[in-house]
Length: 170
Image 1 (cartoon, rainbow, N blue to C red):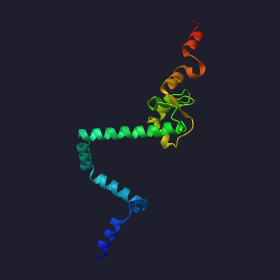
Image 2 (image 1 turned 180 degrees about the vertical axis):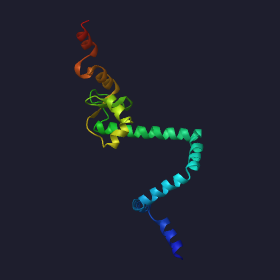
Image 3 (image 1 turned 90 degrees about the vertical axis):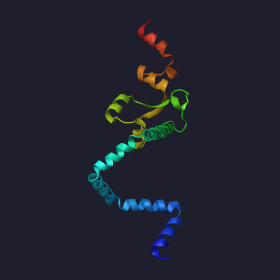
Image 4 (image 1 turned 45 degrees about the vertical axis):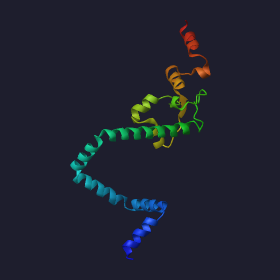
């Protein structure tokens, strides 16, 4: 048996974990070479690559599949953030709401609009990218809206309508 045949058989019988480790270490060792080659190839074949991409991305089935993948990806990221900031309880920090679809992330000290203007990003992705920084909590949409609009939530401070009437004097 020649060396090439032996290597092929060895590779085919290698456990998947060992193959993955080999690929990881190879990639790390040759990262710079691969990047420069990819960049050079792209610059030389830009029009051809853009043509393939445009043709491929224009197909309806590709767009539908990409949209489904993006939706699943965003839902997964959202789930991770809510799980982290709720301490694994998946519950509003203000009231006993546990329905996942009603939960959202809240800036504890306000500033959500300012944060969105500065970072112009998907909040949940930003949280993961920045290793879940402090200053955020899980609230249900009702509590989040009430705190944002009125500065307080009816679950802790009584009815907002009663307080509003007392402030206005009606």
